[in-house]
Length: 69
Image (tube, rainbow, N blue to C red; front, top):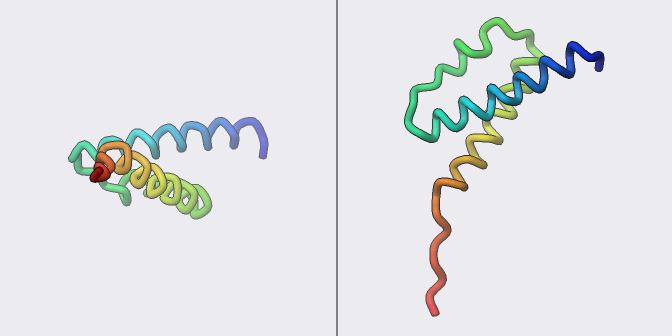
């Protein structure tokens, strides 16, 4: 992976996390519009990261059930 590709992937990772946070906060996120100009590899990678971050952010927001004593 060359320097430009690495830089691009870091930007996509940041965007995936940002959009996942927005989604969890109740904002509408149009994933098709976001990935529309990406090539197939970028689109697949971005969507996987977005789904991962949606799960992680959702787990952070949802409190764990308390154990009964």
